[in-house]
Length: 494
Image (cartoon, rainbow, N blue to C red; front, side):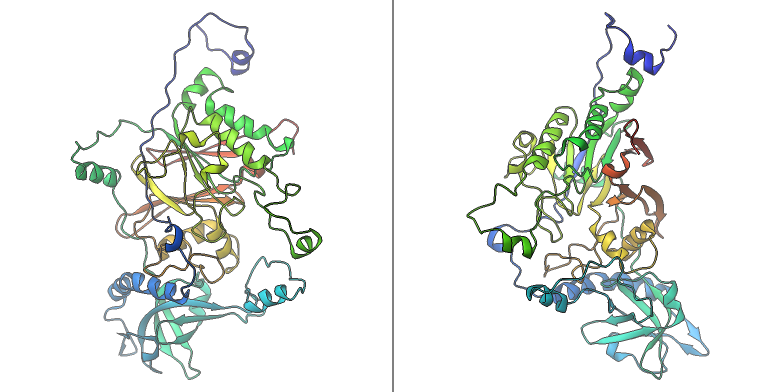
């Protein structure tokens, strides 16, 4: 029988021919609870944020010292051999040395407490800045530790990508002005990367089970970001097209076979457009205070629409839902999972509160890390990269993502300009295990590359575009880690 054109296949009359039943390839899914916060009274915000910087420095200092020591051991300039000093205050003028510390960017245009005070006194706040960098060159780079702070200088810094919160080693000498002239810098570089299936096989061995048999060929992971559901009738058509594609209802038999290879859907941030808008002071002054919420201003349509959309997909495909900046959960990182109460139709597929196993529908934290089909995946809703964008010139998102991996920090600017929980025992944003795939949602456009480390690490960086603006769905091959783009657009739309 000759092949049928796709359009003819979709428009042909009903047939008595029996078509084979397609089974979706299963997904091996093992999330980590790295960013889950304590519950109830155990979670509080009374501690100081400075302790978080000290904990971060203590965690990453050994790795930086190892890299710097191997690179600079015996380094000599004009007869002076570089030596290591333990503290910033131990740096002496004219001596070639290197020291480890935390970067702090002194930037006049950065937000400060005076702006918050002005808001409290009903003064109109200035619009948010796109960049913190000063055009007149007034920005300064500091290196600090528990002992003090040192101002960095030198032309070498102009070629370095640095933001507040990064842990680095600097080599150079202090000049007559008291500034540290930098000759070279070193960063922790990529962390140890687990082998594929390492954690799954380890868990199976601990439980006394036979080591799992790896499937011959894994499927594909669908990744989408920035659905931006507002509840308006006009923004539902592309979502319906996406849903029908994932269910195999809007394609030919050949394409349905390809769709059946999609084993999981990951929604990475900003599923809702404006889930819980915060009223301005002027709006609060106009409205009379009522008990509970104001039914006139509350709109349940976005969450209802997301719930119905997810519940339609769930019988066919498992979903991992990562929250974003506009989703109904707390603003500070790490954002906790969107509550099950907002998903009356979909929560049937969620795990019970006391269960250790993930549900078919897994509402997770932002950031999130876990193992899918044996690969370690780290995903964020995009806030750390968007905040880092304000510190640097240009808009090279992949360069920023690579820097985060080599710094071993998935949110370096927290808590300086990015709200976060004040960790005390250790900074949860430190990347302990290098992921195989790093997903960042809500980016201006799709970009991807692969970076490599000195010990054989290989990381696929993926900037996931906003679906509401681009209509792009990414398919990550769970065997090759290659990316395929499926684009949805409306006829006649701009």
